[in-house]
Length: 206
Length: 206
Figure 1 (cartoon, chains in turn green, cyan):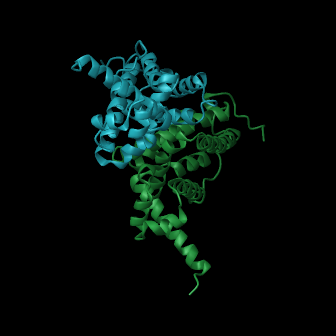
Figure 2 (tube, rainbow over the protein chains, first blue to last red; figure 1 turned 30 degrees about the vertical axis):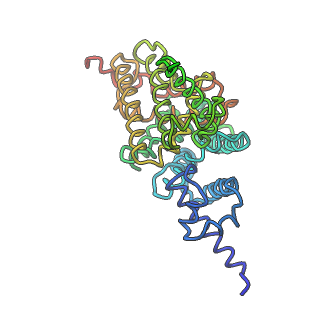
Figure 3 (cartoon, chains in turn yellow, brown; figure 1 turned 120 degrees about the vertical axis):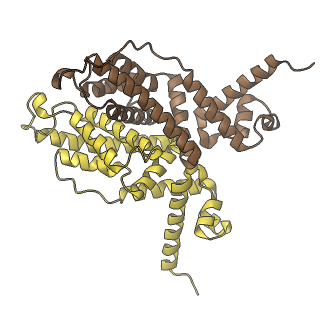
C-alpha cells in the first residue's frame, strides 16, 4: 500500500515529539540520532532518512523550538501594566511545559553562541522580544501606570531580569517555585515605580 | 633526561590554556580531544594521557572554569551600595576576558542541566552568589543606602537581572556595549529605591 500524506504527517509529529523529549531531558548536548531513535522506538537508519547529518537534526530541533515557542498559549493580558505582567509571566517556567521549553532554550544557547549566523538570529529574536515589551511598557506609561522614561531602556532591564530568573529557576526549582517567581516578578514591576513618584504620565501622547 | 616537575606544570598550564580557548570559541558543545589537540599543536594521543575519556575532559573544563572564576581579579568595592555595584560589575562581560568566561559559563549550562549532580552543584554555586549579594545588600541597608526589605529576596532579583543581562550582552555585544551594561545596572540599582522613599533605615542593627 502506498503511504498517504496522513502517514507522513503523523510520522513527522512523532519525530518532533521524540526530538522534543530528548532535548528536554538531555539538551542539545545530548541530541543524537541514536537518542531520538531510542525515544521513537525506531532504527537510526530510519532517522537518517529525515536527518542525513547531525547538522540537519540540530537545525530541525532549533526550528521546532521556534515553532513551539511561537504557538504556545498566551495569557490574556488586558492592557497597560497588566499586559506587561502577563507577557513576562508567559516566559517564566511556571508549568512543566514551560519548564521544558525554557530548559531547551537555555540549552540551545551553547549551540547558538558557537555559530555566528545563529547567534545573529538569536540576537534578532531577543531584540524582537524587547521591542514587544517596550511597546507594552510604553502603553502602560500612556495609561499612567508606569512613570515616564525611555521604554526601550526599561524593556532591556526587564528582559534581563526575566532571562536570569528563568536560569535560576531551572537550576533551583525548589528555591524558585512558581509562586516565588511570580513574587519576584511583582517585586520587579513594583520597583519600576508608581507614576506618582515621577513626572506626570505622558497621557497626551497616543 | 627525566621530565622535571616544572615541565609537568608547564604542560598542564598549556593544556588549560588550550581547553579555555576551545571553550571560548566553541563552547562545551565543541569541546573535543581533537579540538584541544589542534589548539595545543599536539597529538590526540598525548591528550588521552590526560583525559582517558570525553567525560574527563568535560570534568577538567568545569573545574578550570571554577578555578578561573574564583581567582579572577575583583574590583575594590568600598562598602554599602558601592560594594553591591562593584560585585555586580565584576560579573558582567565588560572586558574580553570577562566575555570569554561568561560565554563559557553560559555554555556550561546545557551540560550542567543534563547531569543531576552537576545541576545541584550549580544550584549551590548560585545560592552562594545570592548569599554574598544578600550580605552586601544588608550592609547597604544598615548604612541607610537602600530601603528596608528582605535582603535575600532583593538579592534573588538582583542576580536574576545580572544573569539575564550577561546572556543578552553575549548575544548582542553591539546593543549591549560596556557603557550600556553599566547604565542598565545603575538603572537597576536606582530602582531598588532610595531609603527616604521607605521606612527609616535599620541602622541600629549591626
